[in-house]
Image (cartoon, rainbow, N blue to C red; front, side, top):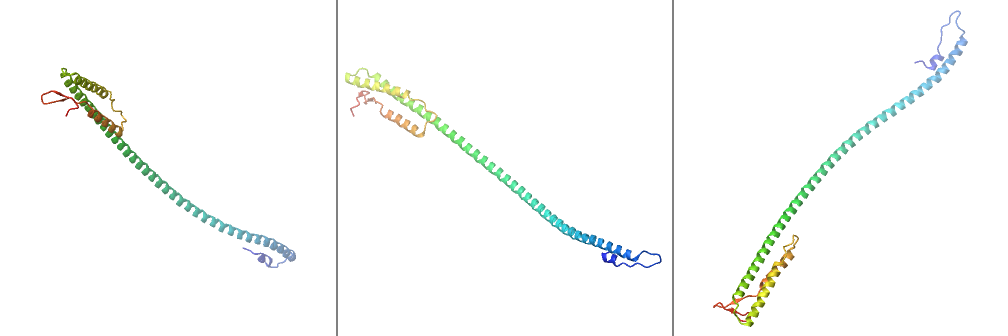
Length: 216
């Protein structure tokens, strides 16, 4: 590439009927000055292009770095997401298993309570039947002894009336409610036992004769 100095210092051979040397030199000098300006601008432009090229390379490197960082972040995010999903599924499954276990245990407990309740109902019915049977047997004994003195008759009638009252109370005992608690069950059985103990007893001696209650 020609430099401004090459243009300015260029020498031409002299020939007959050639150009005016002074005019040629002046023109070459003007050309050299113009070319010098263009040449310097070109150098400046080349420098700027070099700087821009370096900047582009730097930005390109930054772009690659950012892409790698985004790729790593995406991979980490997917891994965290998958891990969280897996943990959530495990928690849900564990909760379902525990809920199923609780439901099964509750169902078993309800079945046990129902069974005990039915057993209690049967026990109360059997007990009531025994008490009524005992009362009936006492009444039968009373009926067999119609030829006795007035005092004894009054005592027997009083006993018979007491037996009838107790029989009525026994028959009036309601069925066990479905929500009867253990304390209520225990209280009911205690009352039934007390009623049994308070039943009037008809005693007979070895000869089959009636023995009043105040005699040993």
